[in-house]
Amino acid sequence: MDGLRAKVDTDALADAYGPMLYRFCRSLAFDREDAEDLFQDTFLKALERPGKLAADPKNFLFSTALSLWRSGKRKHARRARIAPTGPLEDRDAAGGPEPEAEALAREELERVRAAAAALPEKYRLPLALYYGMEMKVNDIARTLGLPAGTVKRRLYTARALVEKGLAEDEN
Image (cartoon, rainbow, N blue to C red):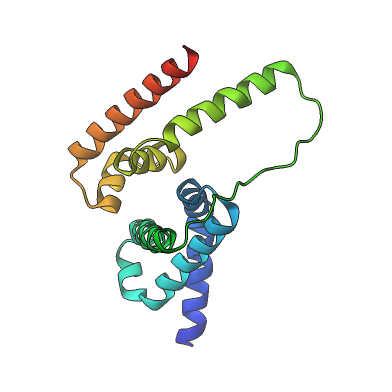
């Protein structure tokens, strides 16, 4: 009976937070396959620690995803020092001719994404959580383990740096 209840709770958890968590993983990984692996690993960790999950599921899932991503990043950095490899690019197939306005909007979006991706991690993560996951400042603070004022300051700085990066691209 407990196993069945855990499955139902896990299904409800996946329904409630799955799409948001996947978008967060996608914003961290910038690669579909890595994002899917991170998403699955996050839910596996959640199943291993049902007690922590029950207290604050959203915060636990996002914190776990962030922790797993950072661990994977460190592992990748260690491996890259030993045997460097070139980056793999995630490319979507073009769907045919598009109107000029749509192409310009997509180009602008890519410029903003590139500017945000170039930010240091301490600015990029709050930005991704705030705009990509639509989390509130207090939730971001709990997820990242920072004071709310620090999160607000990092969001302000991140926006300024993205604006500056976009302005430099135009020149």
